[in-house]
Length: 178
Image (cartoon, rainbow, N blue to C red; front, side, top):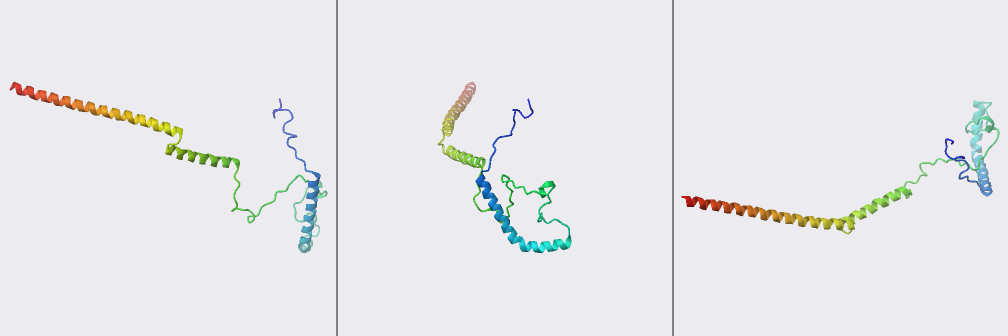
């Protein structure tokens, strides 16, 4: 059996294809963006190109400040419509004040905490089944303790009476001998 488990592996799963209309719309938007950049950067590039020519005479200006491409990439323009470039967000664009979207786990955790708090309030008020059972058990234990305390008092009183009777009997016995 191969190392990965099943034959075939992960290839071919969940392939997504871009429709031709989306590709055309992206190509048009890219062309318009390039035109706008060229128009805005024309004045800046004129100044930079004069500086480049004076600084280094035999440098390629195809890169326009981007990274130097290796091999054939510099000669052929390759545009992959399925690859989306990550755009860096500026600190000013990030919304810190807006409501934060919670993930499913965070929402479930908050709901669990709220449910626990509600249960504890009901439990302390004696409204839950467990609280009722606890109170009934507590009442039984109180009755048992009261009965035990009453019996103990009765036994103590009986011992005191017996001791007093014994002392009285001793006192009478000593009197009769004299």
